[in-house]
Length: 203
Image 1 (cartoon, rainbow, N blue to C red):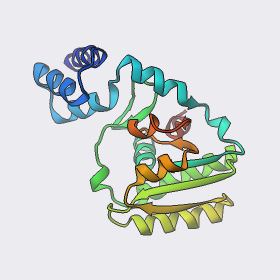
Image 2 (image 1 turned 135 degrees about the horizontal axis):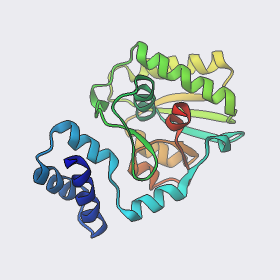
Image 3 (image 1 turned 90 degrees about the vertical axis):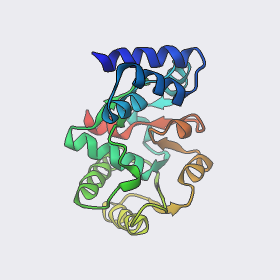
Image 4 (image 1 turned 30 degrees about the vertical axis):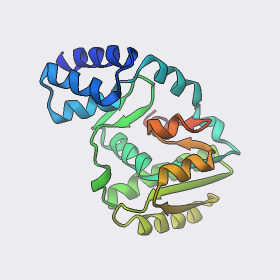
């Protein structure tokens, strides 16, 4: 399949030091891939070094018991939504689940958001972290309203923690450096430990 061939080419280039955008563009152009396939490659392919680093930080979900965790709010909710809908989802080369919809900037707080959050609340009730901190990007529409809804849901579920917005959610998440739920590579490479909540829900 062209996409698989493109993935092999992109990984070959990444492993030889080409930057991510250059590697992606060369692979996409060579195999004449469409936007959906491009998004798939962007989320699926990683260099051997990235795979090694990411896997070394990934802990089983059971290890959040009694620990503080921080959730990259929109990133995780979008991926859990993809899990529940069984579409726009890929297990990347680093074994982390990612959505391929690239919907982030157009994300809408709706009934699907509430379903995804409900599954997360169930997961936290099962694995009992000490505290859960959700961080949402403030530039996304209704992020403050969503943070307030998350706080309410956590309170109703008896889960300790908080939900807030930040102009730079990445910076705040990295600064907290608790066990982190995110599939964002920059965040993964900047914190000590990560957990894949979406994969735990899928399985």
